Image (cartoon, helix red, strand yellow):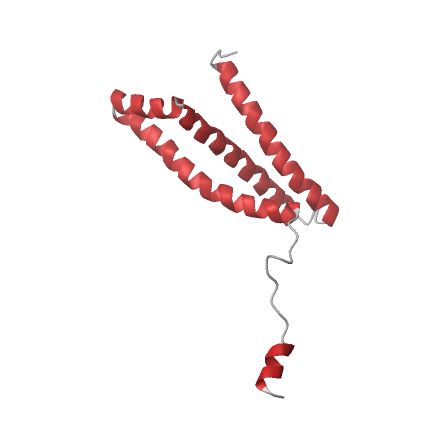
Length: 135
């Protein structure tokens, strides 16, 4: 067998063009992304806490940032990432028990994770604005 024939007979490795994006795969990717986002969001939370502990001026600067449209958008994303990562962790905990591992149930659980994270984020923000008397 020549070298050229041996190379041609070897199977090709799977690549992204042959995979179909399924909900459980997407949730796995998003779970990793939200984990990274939580790292940077927690740095911002630490900045806010350090500003609160240092001086009134530093706290005013932090509050002005988080009170701006960009700051609120970041806080909204942080809230969603936190809740999505939490629900993804619960989903993995359920799978660790050996439950809901079937194709259909795992897909339903993945969809419930995304829907639940969006609904919980909205509820948290509605409760936060209601507590401030904004409604």
